[in-house]
Length: 346
Image 1 (cartoon, rainbow, N blue to C red):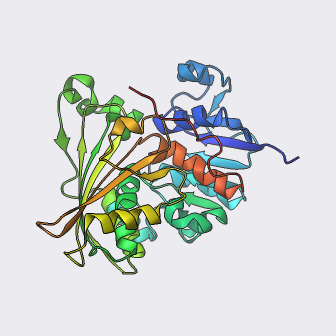
Image 2 (cartoon, rainbow, N blue to C red; image 1 turned 180 degrees about the vertical axis):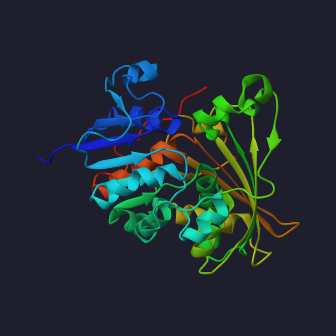
């Protein structure tokens, strides 16, 4: 019988970190051994995050127990700095921040306006999207968990890009629930407070958003190219969880039919445990609390464009659930272990 894997969660008090703890609490092959937090260090976990009342661990400022595997959900920049000594010491890791998603230190600085804290680890990191990188993830020691917007966008466009159905020129109109900003941002920025976000929709990042180069990088790789044109406009909408992306790209053959596109998507995602092609346009609530990404492709014959809508829960498939899916692959466990909960409804 193999030993249970001991897990560390860095920044457990954030939304992604606490969601990780919730999911891992019932995972049969792991045990949470250490949790950290910055402002909550010195408290016990149920004091700082009451819904995790059954995980009675002390919150420390650093990982103080011996662990086999670690997740980090610190903000970008701080995450790589905290992970570097652990990864250098042989601990396998998933970074839920953006620190290892962009393949070069220069590209990271251009996207996030800070120097990369651990550039020596960039070549070791694998982009953690199993639907396109499963075999590489299985052999990796460091995973860059995708961003929530990029995950919804890439999964929406991957079948069409990889099979050459569309040109590498995409427009992505995406919406996120408030929790996508992270607990710290919501506390500090009035834009996310109830009185200002309720019954309100706004676009942001129009002059540049850190997720745009991540999406462009991965779509270019899927298309066998050095670059891809991606126009990405995110929006904040008044709901707690959810990502909804509407993606547009010109068909390489404008006469391609909706039926042909849907057949391509069904074949591409056949057998995938969590990414499903739907028969009708999906809704964000159909994914809430689950590790699902739902994708619906169609064609506008008047313009010769592919249109794809996709949705997922930004805290599960877009963050913690995806991180656990990656962990399962890295540890040689069944990919779906601990992640088979159905969506919440209503």
